[in-house]
Image (tube, rainbow, N blue to C red; front, side):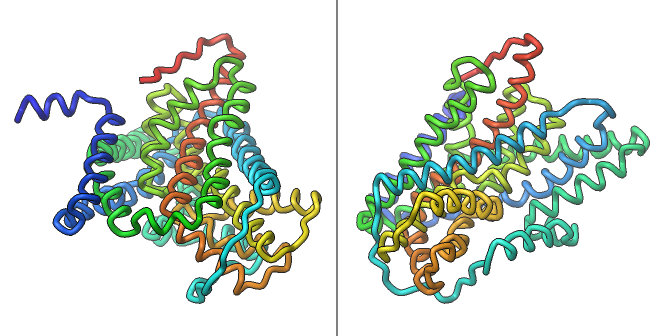
Amino acid sequence: MTNLLKQWNQMSLVKRIIIGLIVGIILAIIAPDAAKPVAILGSLFVGGLKAVAPILVFFLVMSAISQHKSGQKTNMKSIVILYLLGTFLAGLVAVIASFMFPVSLTLGAGIDSISPPGGVAEVLKKLLMNVVDNPVKALFNANYIGILAWALLLGLALKNAPETTKTMISNFSDALSQVVRWVISFAPLGIMGLVFDTIATHGIKSLLNYGQLLLVLVGCMFFMALVVNPIITFIGIRQNPYPLVLKCLKDSGITAFFTRSSAANIPVNMTLCEELGLDKDTYSVSIPLGATINMAGAAITISVLTLAAVNTLGIKVDIGTALILSLLSAVSACGASGVAGGSLLLIPLACSLFGIPNDVAMQVVGVGFVIGVIQDSCETALNSSTDALFTAVAEFAQWRKKGKKISINTK
């Protein structure tokens, strides 16, 4: 048994996750009732990540800002530009794909219990109110905008604090990072539980009626991940982009695919950035920020489902309106929460651009929840892996200008 555990721990995390994935699928197919307790492992894993992520982000950002030396350069401006550019291009890709492969829906009963935002102004108002949220409440509710705001303010206020105080904050940050590593080591068991619960609860049959819609959605996400993002990466680092792109998809995207939460995947991205040798002062801020505003997958979901509703109702769309939809989906996506299904409630906002009634738009949201097993998993994998990718691209671009060699360990 000792030798078996030793061999297990020596395997890469990705291989262990794949084993957990296979075991979860087998249990869900062969013995869904007998193996039902396995599902709790997934809840415990995601719960552990979600529990530690808010306080980790709070101390990481506060520590990074408080110890930042005046005149020390970071790449935050470049990273934010990449985030916004990637989100807009994702919306544009989704609009083009929807014109090339138009999808129609069979709309049924609406979901009346969900209240979507009333407009862009309401989305922006909510974002601003989250900034000034009570810090304890922000931590309790995992409001990452509020957590970032308070961490930045406290970090700035502590810049002139004694070194002993800064060391204490840094020690808390390191301790929380270690807790995250412990939680992540249980990822294979957690993902076994998650995939078992998904298959045992939803099955595959419910997805067959939405095959074409899923193909367009997932196709757009794969196109962004494997074509558009590599082009952006190549422009930044001027070398083969795929080692970096595929490493981010492997180390970040796989975990995000199963947790279906950008917020829960923040600790995973922190570890990835550390492994890539990136500046902690930068990624401790850019990764939590990316989980909030870098939403390429959400922009694709909003655009594709909105245009599917447009096609279903026979509404004619000109190129100008389609471009406005790309921009609107990007802005709306930035307001999507970093939790499972966060982008779906913003579909009625985009539908309002075409005068689609709210009750019809909410039926489209209902379709989104039906296909959410695959759609939301792929969306989160794209969103979260791109957080780490763009953070790395911005820093590697600076390395290139300084003549520093860019070496990426693909293991």
